[in-house]
Length: 414
Image (cartoon, rainbow, N blue to C red; front, side, top):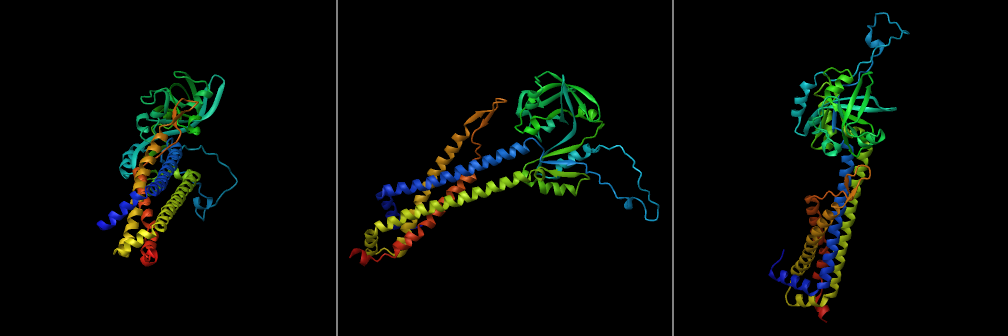
C-alpha cells in the first residue's frame, strides 16, 4: 500500500495516539462482533424453524395422483344416448403404488441431491386403550431405511425404533401421556378398513412437532399393509434431499419422469418460507446499518485525527512529503485500524457464539436438553464480517486522507 516512509509515519502515529487507536479498534471490533452474533443467531433460528418442520417429514413425497372424474360428454360418444338422473355408488379405490420396488432404486439414482428414499404406508384409524379412543395416523415403514429420510432413532425418549418386529409400534410422547402408556403396554388400533391389530409399545419419541407427537403411530411396513388392505403396495415414497430448498424444483422435474405426483415440503409451508425470507431481509438490513455505523465511526475518528494534526501534516509537506504520500499514510492507518479491529471482533464474536451455544435448558415434558441460543456459526460469516470491516475502514479513510493532502503547509506553519 505504500513505501517505507508511509509505513513508518502511519505506525508511529498509531502508537503516538494510543487512546484514539484503541477507540477505533474497539468500534470496529464491536461492529464485527455484532455482525457475527446476529447472523449466527438468525441463522440458528432459521435452522431450528426448518428442522421443526422438515425434521419430521420427508422433503419430497411421491404419491399416486388423485383421479379426476370425467364429465359425461367425454365418456359417451356424441351420437349415443346419454342417461342422467340415476346414481350408481362405486366402491372407493385406495390410492397406492404397486410397483414401488421398481421405482425405489430409480429414484435413488435419479439426482445426486436425493440422499435416501423410503417406502411408506399411511392411513387413518382409531387408537383404543381401555375406554379411551382417539383418531390418529398410522404409518408403516422399514425403521432402518426410513430413519435415513426422517431421523427418529435419535429422538427416542424411551425404548427403541430400530428392529421393530411384527405387532410392535412406537408413538409420540404426547400420545403416550394422553393414554397413560408406558413401554411394553398394549394398545388396539382399528383401521379405516375395519381391521384390528393389537400392538405392543416398543418406543416413545419426541420430535418437537406437535402434529407428530400427539397423533402419530409408527409400525412395521408389513403390519400396515395388512391393516389397510394394500397387499404388497405402499401409499407413498418419501425422499430426503441434501439441499432442501431445491425441493420444489426437484418435484417439478420428477413429475415429468414418474407416473405419480411428487409433492415438496415447501408447497405446504408457504407461511414458514415467507417468515424465513423476512428474517433474511432483516439480517441484511442489520448488516447494512451495522456496516454504515462502523464506517461513520472510523471516518469520524480519522477526521478528528486530521484536525488535531494539522501542524504535523504541514511540517511533513514542508519537508517534501507529497500529496500521494499523505493520502497513503491516512488510508494505511484506516486499513490497519479496521484490520486489527476485524481480527479482534472475529475472535470475540466466535467465542461469544460458542459460549452461548453451550447454554442448555431442559424440556419439562421429556427432559430433553434444548439449546437456549440456537447459534449457526459458519466460517464464511466470520470471513465476510472481517472483509466488510477492512473495506469499510479503507473507504472511510479516503475522505480524511484527501482532506489531509489538501492542507497548505504555509498557512499551518504561519
